[in-house]
Amino acid sequence: MSEAAFRYKRPPLYPKQEAAIFCPERYGIVEASTKSGKTHGCITWLFEKAVTGGHGQNFWWVAPVYGQAKIAYRRLKRALKYSVPNDFWSQNDSDLYIHLSHFDTTIWFKSADKPDSLYGEDVYAAVIDEASRCKAESWYAVRSTLSATKGHIRMIGNVKGRKNWAYRLARRAEMGEENMRFSKITAHDAVEAGVLDAEEIDDARAVLPKEVFDELYLCIPSDDGGNPFGLSAITACIGQLSTDPAVAWGWDLAKSRDWTVGIGLDRDGQVCGFHRWQAPWSITESKIANLTKRVPALVDSTGVGDPVLESLQMAATNYKNKEHAAAWSHFEGFKFTGPSKQQLMEGLRVAIQDGRVRFPDGPIVQELEQFEYEYTKTGVRYQAPEGFHDDCVMALALAVRQFNLKGVSYGTHAPVNFTRTSPWRLH
Image (cartoon, rainbow, N blue to C red; front, side):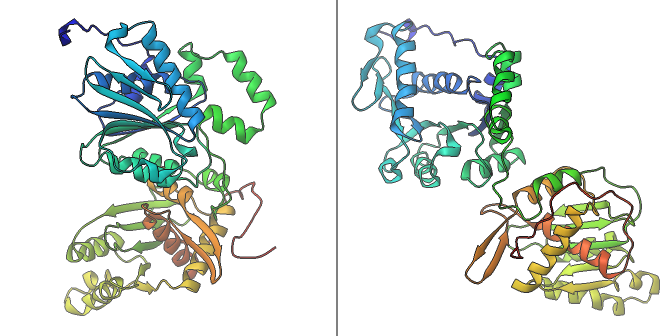
């Protein structure tokens, strides 16, 4: 039978569902409400990849455990049974695969509970179902199977806390990383599309704990307890970028693939300057000086930052124009060590939980929300998750410290209604 004899019409998908899954980006990450149609949409996507694939190609559906993989397998099998001629496809209920004989492609349904079993194959497109519940090692394995083929992948599921690889990858996509698409589909979107019933959602809200309902239906992650600032405190400090002049600056300098970030605070402790770039040191030094002017600034002087700070401080002696020279003479250094970083983070924590600092939504908020701490044998370790940046957090902390060092009075912001905690003190 020729390929021209195969006629296919995509099953109905509502606009937000279709846009999230059938996007052109290689990595599609979808945080979605339970029963919002994410599985149906991705089964459709994977089937279309298979029917447009080449002879002998493999396509994978990966779920946290065998039972969940089997659910998706049965759903595709049932759809094919009622819509596609039997001579176009065959099934294997033991190994959970469907062979599309007309195209000589195979869709496999696999479990992520044994990551080592996922290595070795060349896969041309894949779906990771309930990604937040799959092991990180399984994601690494699936990604390796797409290397030779440059295959596309869709990662879908409910939100489940913040301390998992799927949440972190979603935040990278949300921040606009190249070739990634982040999408969120809430229960309200599904209700609007006619997929879920509004009364059913109201009932779920009434009987489930708030944090459970928020994750399952609204895609709002619970606080895993690993954030030193408190998520509600961070949210309470979000405001507009101030138009008033800065009275203190904090500069975190780029290292490796990081960013140079500068944050200025006005007299009320509100962010009035936010700059972020990657450039050679000569350009960075000039930009810092021109942006900071005569305002006191605290500069990261750790490692590569030390000669940059010295250059900023010594440049004043090379200028005959005293007014220009003065612009370079208000820089102080801050070296990051274990104890000094802890002290710096404690100062930022207090400022955030007391509502004494305000910052605009965007990269600053995203980094603050992602920031983590954990207890170790040698003390407290605090850092951005692997693969993420903390430049904005460090620059804000330096700005707050410089603000305090210069004795600037905070504004009259009301304290955040938040139980004050400290990850670095035992209670």
